[in-house]
Amino acid sequence: MVKNSAVWRIAIGAGGALLLAAGAALAQRGGYGAISENPRYDGKFMFARLKYTVGVGGYYYHGMPAWAHGDPYAEENLMKIIDAISSLHPHVDEGVVLGLEDPDLFKYPVSYMTEAGFWVMNDKEAVALHDYLLKGGFVIFDDFRDPPRGGGGWSNFAYNMERVLPGAQFLPIDISHPIFHMFYEIDSLDILPQAYDGGRPIIRGLFENNDPTKRLMAIINYNTDISDFWEFSARGIYPVDESNEAYKLGVNYIMYGLTH
Image 1 (cartoon, rainbow, N blue to C red):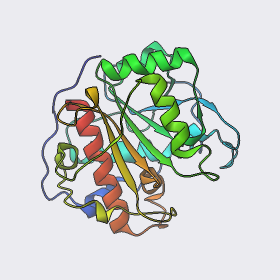
Image 2: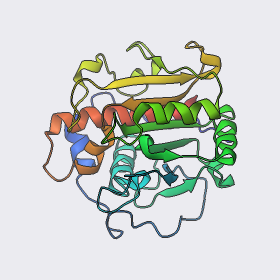
Image 3: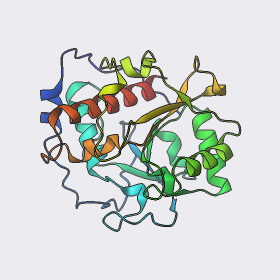
Image 4: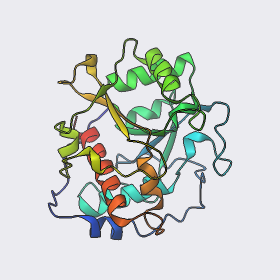
């Protein structure tokens, strides 16, 4: 996997107004779950969404498989933000959907999985994800919660990841971690918006060798749905300030994944 260098212009002060303006135009490729074919890889950054076999109950939203929730608007709006505030200039109107066994996954240093409570994984997929993580891949896990609404919830996710990386630990991430300071300065996790989940969001990390001083291989947003704010930011459903905070997290996640 080729890791991109930091190629963006640091735009201190590029805040909420810019985020909202950049996310205002919705994608026009046919609506939810409309990806029919991945674009040809050309080396330009794309956001890779991970698809998986869906467990019982995972087709509750628009009849879509759980892995497709928010597609394509969440990633397209986030990529518009990245394009507006940096010189990375990713693909903004097309995304990539890949299974864990697809060898093309290794072309994409940052990937995303939603609704991991419904994630069903076979042994070959476990090996592939193991290799992806250890070769430098970074995964954002988002939008899953306790059962019954979240499928198998954390237990299902932890079971799968134990098969990927036996002995893996999911450690709390302190606000001092570099991922919260990659582009935007995020000084408190108390500001994280909650769209519809009750209680506090839980953010944990998976580190190389379970050592928090080493590379963060995955970040897990549990009991929350950060990408829901990316998906609906241009529709007037959520307060602007809350959408901005969710975008700040997304931008920092991407920047960290590209540089570590």
